[in-house]
Amino acid sequence: MVSSSLPDAKILSVRTLDNKDARWINLVQIEYQAPDGKVRTWEAMRRPTRPKDSPVDAVHIIATRQSPGGVSEHEVLLEKQFRPPAGKVVIEFPAGLVDPNETLEECALRELREETGYVGEVTSSASGAAAGLVLFGSPASSFSRALSVMVNIDPTLPENQNPQPKLEEGEFIDCFWVPLKELHQEIRRLDAEGFAIDGKVGAFAEGIEITKLWQQ
Image (cartoon, rainbow, N blue to C red; front, side, top):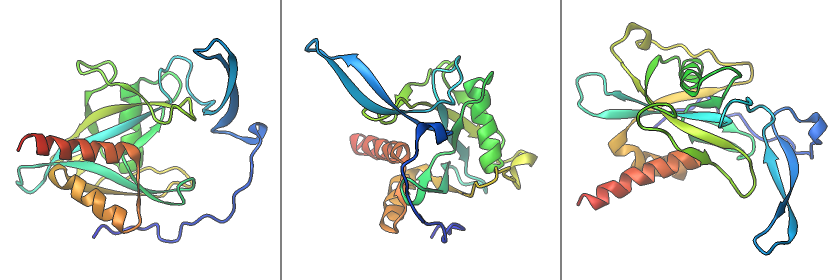
């Protein structure tokens, strides 16, 4: 069983917030011309923090490693973090917002180090040979865009022997490794225990499981 140090997190209240008081997300109204030629409106959320030169708001880090201890299998790094909109502890990939004058690769390695303590090497990203797709997480309600960056973590490096996260004030994150071949099963188990499953993690796990079925 995966332990958690986040058992006491809970929602205390919810109130409507005006845009002038919002730091991370704004509610906007979009005026657009529909396929029928009529001018219509749509409500959506938009992050005011995206750098002008960045195609995305954030990166999601799919960090893997060869299992330590001589076991010949790959593991993927996941996090547990309480997310107030979900009202639950969420199982997710390491992730973070892009800073100004920062490449997506730099953002991925910085966020990985800050949230997990691990030092990794980018294996594919937006500017790599295997260009990443810009993902629209909720295109019906949000401008938000993200990109997944693949990172390899070498468990034999001294800096990865006892990784120490550098979390910001108010951040509470538990990290844990899951064998890729057991990911789908583990995600199902965590869901049954009451954890919320981030859509990107769930889709990743389902994709791996589908490939297993096709190989039979």
